[in-house]
Length: 92
Image (cartoon, rainbow, N blue to C red; front, side, top):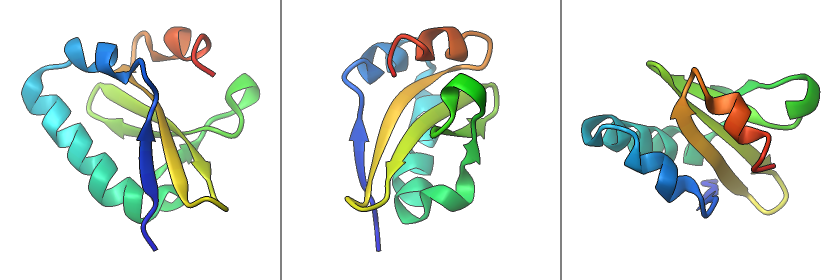
């Protein structure tokens, strides 16, 4: 069963800083892979980020939370790997 993909409101600002060709591929990963089986493709985060998962795409990271009962995925942030975790702590 497919999951419904929801996006954090600040995702729009993330997308502005990513090249258009890259963001097209990232959206395809989200809509095809994560919507089908988010637990298979994501790697769990640890410590203060426990409960969240991440997917790598080149130098970019997609961090999301899965709501299993509702069959929903909330995409929290899409950022370059160098600054994703600093920004993520403000969105949780």
